[in-house]
Image (cartoon, rainbow, N blue to C red; front, side, top):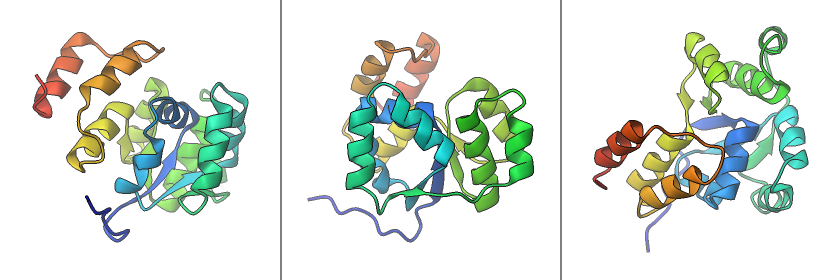
Length: 171
């Protein structure tokens, strides 16, 4: 049996609605403790996620993993208000909270990703999470998840897919 790494050494993370919903849909959100100490949920993210598709599974997961998925209300208000100019509430709150807590940010949307990286935040996207999970031996292969993503609204260029699969020795 593979042992879960200790909490020490794993970073704190803030997650955005789209990425959280995507990981729930892929049925791998419960494996995030392999990578992160805690996942902070801004209230805006939780509110958006609980209104979206898959909300029942998400509510169940958050309840079952309540010591890992933690509500957090600490955020830089100036940053949150500034981000709301052209980002949705969940993205703005996640960025502001990651800045306040000096944590990793789990986020996919292009505009929000650009804004967060310009702020020098560490941002991890879905494809990188999958690779990290494989590296941690929490999943055995990345390709099946890429196949599942291809059937959703997630877009991954063929060239990028090939490169990522080669990186993990799957092509």
